Image (cartoon, rainbow, N blue to C red):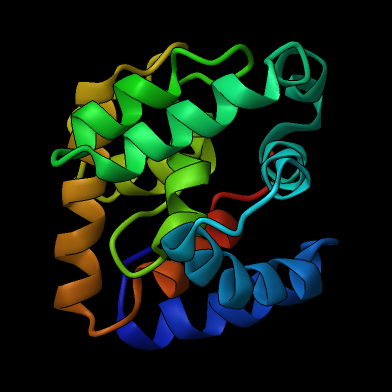
Length: 174
């Protein structure tokens, strides 16, 4: 398959039809970025993001003290570099690089996208990423992935979110 603007836009629709949490995801993508910007986000918002990305991680995430989560999120938002943001978030229980990318997506969907094995596979198969996704991706792996996504979104004139949804849909159920 060759990526194109038309294919990506068509697959975004497929994502919407297949993803159970799509309606709430759309709502959260509208409400959470301003909440993170003005500091009005809640622990429940964070738990929703964790469940959205991987419900298996919620038990680990809930081990975190509310004040620690607040401090780490605040520090991550203030950090200048993407790698620093991810490093800070991954200090929390239940937050590895993939989860940190999901949090950053809901902080700013115009700048960040979620690291997902299905999407990575599509990018690898199409020559945008040199290797298969490692079992435990690093910050450097996320930066490589994010850079590829920025370039592709720009090349096909789609948003990062459209690209992510399309790649997820194209990745299938493997």
